[in-house]
Length: 94
Image (cartoon, rainbow, N blue to C red; front, side, top):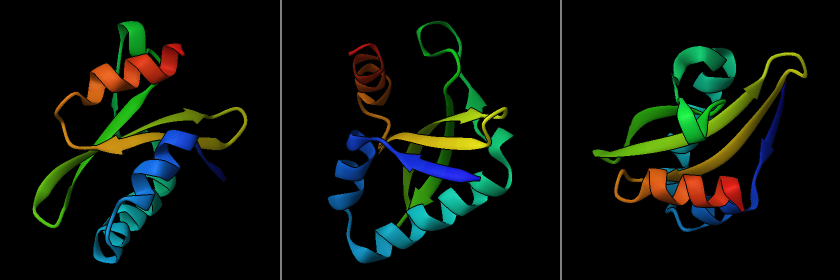
């Protein structure tokens, strides 16, 4: 499976401390092993899945798209719940 990162995801990842990055790496490995684990979104975000997990005790959301036919996982964005979906819609429509 190919795992691709968007520019936004790379920037989000860059802001994290090393112990936080380890939690994100574990979450990405878990998603790669079972791509349907995230909650499928509808409407403006159709095709996007969001996986929720904890990073140092704080709930964190990771948005991704999984193309089964291409066996490709595209990591879109990462962050806490505040303004997460608003920013995700803005990036997706840009």
